[in-house]
Length: 319
Image (cartoon, rainbow, N blue to C red; front, side):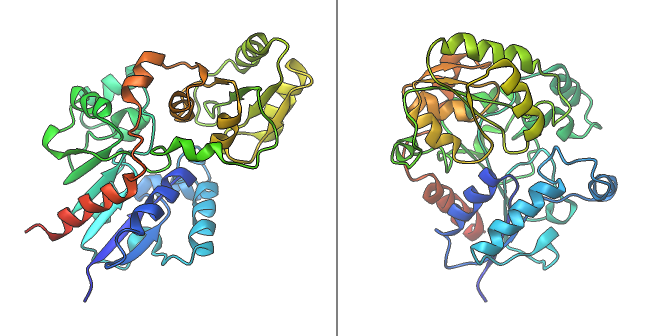
């Protein structure tokens, strides 16, 4: 029998990354699942209280729709064990039924900066890692390989405490060939693009009024376009923009990457979209240090999915 690989997806970015990796592992049997949780966290999910996470019902539904539309085998919650390998989009939460498997973790995108919660979780081992969000990525030590975006990120994760011998620099799908986004059908060009965040949706503080006013100031007489975060409250965000930036354009759907390719200036907060702006040489305003973004920039090798598949194959076949 062919060996079996279980891909745990999440956001649309994470889901499409897993799909791309699987295409280079066609000699193995595949199953896919939206992100899931157990125990008390599962109770919270059923009550709709963790919609701000990748295990939330809306994200799960979007993931399931994608998997079905692409004809991929679905094993929601990994009930059809055993699997020979698990490829997952994050290790800040490890599902109970994969902990004894061989695991490969794939970096999704930009990683949250260190915070008080990060330092608290790292010090108090009994606290769940997910409390510090993506800042705890790579620190579970439960995997055999951790595929990361760049040499800069390898150093970044090592400084935070990830095991150096398990980190493999592969690049990451969706951010390994940003030039591809320059060929698109988005009808507008030469504008200032403001990509909003979902901080409020994940129960964090954000001064949205200040963000909008800053975007208006940076744009000046130029056309201003807003691209809303996929999980953002569209009605609220649109209402705020209409009040503070009348005449600007607001998009709740569409490819943010293609919009970045056509803009002159990019304004973001804590978003992986900043990497697209860096790769394409855009003028960028971000809550991240721009020099740090350049240092962490994902490899533009166009072969991240293939590289990660090679890592998966090695982990699968080693004794």
